[in-house]
Image (cartoon, rainbow, N blue to C red; front, side, top):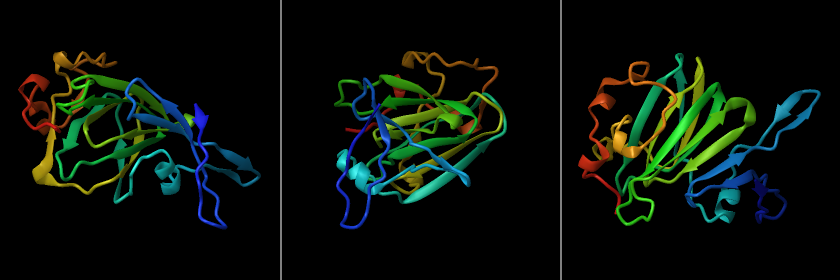
Length: 200
């Protein structure tokens, strides 16, 4: 990881994050530098000027806190179509999960490919997911809490998804289909080869 300096407004300091790049250039993970003293600790988790310095236009419009009491809870694959594409900054605040993202841009060289990254609460890691990825995660511990900062609001008429367990995606899930706790509507999502609602 490397920390990138950002320009701040006069009299202010941009509290940056450590940045990790991956094979998918628009997927980034961040680690928050934790400062501790006799009171406890504090760590930056988001700074707009810092994101701007990375060339990421991400204004937080909404935030969700998802609580999953059970291991093997699966949420996804979900995404929204333009003009309501929904970028996400995701952090585990308790527990552990596997975060998986599939590129759904027809014009992309990584179209249909996925990236899977484990996030652990105690490591202060986050993942930034642009709006042109279908997102899913699976909890790996009981009582896993996840906070989503979202760059767009929920747009029901533009919200779509993929089958989480589609073998065509080639995802090595750490749980079996029998173990998975999945919402009924997510059991009826199309396979990747059948989906027509895609990003350009």
